[in-house]
Length: 271
Image 1 (cartoon, one colour):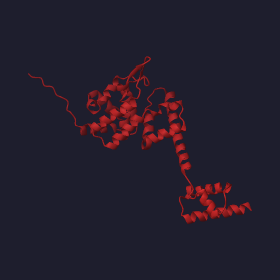
Image 2 (tube, one colour; image 1 turned 120 degrees about the vertical axis):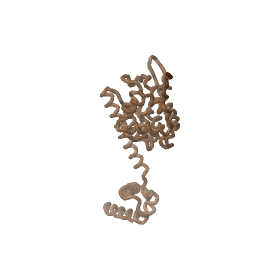
Image 3 (spheres, helix red, strand yellow; image 1 turned 90 degrees about the vertical axis):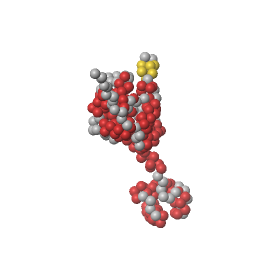
Image 4 (cartoon, helix red, strand yellow; image 1 turned 180 degrees about the vertical axis):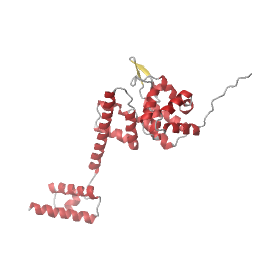
C-alpha cells in the first residue's frame, strides 16, 4: 500500500496578507500568533518570526525575543500599522546578533529590521503608505533608549520631527515595548515617556508662539502712529499679537483702528 504525504498548501500573497491582518486585528492577537508559530503557518506568513524564538535578549532575560515580540504586539492598540510595527520591531535581531565582552548585543537591529520589514511587506503586497509607515516605526522604535541619559530640547524636537505624523503610534510602541516583570523598572519607563510627551507638547507650544508675529511690524506701527522707537513700540506689538492670538487675522483697516484705540487709551492713561 502506497503511503501518501499531504503537502502543506502554499498560500498566495493576498491570502497571507489577509490571514496576518485577521490575526493582528483581533483585540488580543496572542493566541493567534502562537498558533501560527506552532502550526508552521508563520513560516509562510512571516518566515523571520519563528527564528526569534532562538534569540535570548539580554534586556528581557525572562523570555526569548519571540515571546517578547508577541507580548509587545498584544499590548498595542488594534491598529494595523501599529500592530505590524510591533510584530516586526525586533525582526532584525537574529541578523545583528554579536557577542561582545561576554554579552549579546543587537547593534543597529532597528535599521536592519526596517529593511527586512520593507522586503516582507512588499512581498505580501501591502499598500505603499502602510509599508512606509510600518518601516519607519520599526526604524525609530529604539530611538527612545537614550532618553534616560538626558536629552537636550534639540534632541526632543528631533525625535518629534522625525516621527512626524507617526508620533502617537511611535510613543505607544515605545510604551508597549516594556514587558519587564520588574515593576519599578516598568514604572520608570512609563514616567520617562510621560516626561518626554510633556516636553514635546511644551516645546511645540513655545515654537508656535515664537513663530507668531503681529499683523503689523515695528516700522508699520511707528509710521502709523507717527512716533519713533522706544518701549511703546514693543508694547504695541505685544498688544497686536494678543489680538491676533485671540481673534485671528483682522482686516488692515480694523487692526489699525484697534491700534489707534489702544494708543489713545495708553496716551490718556499716561496723562
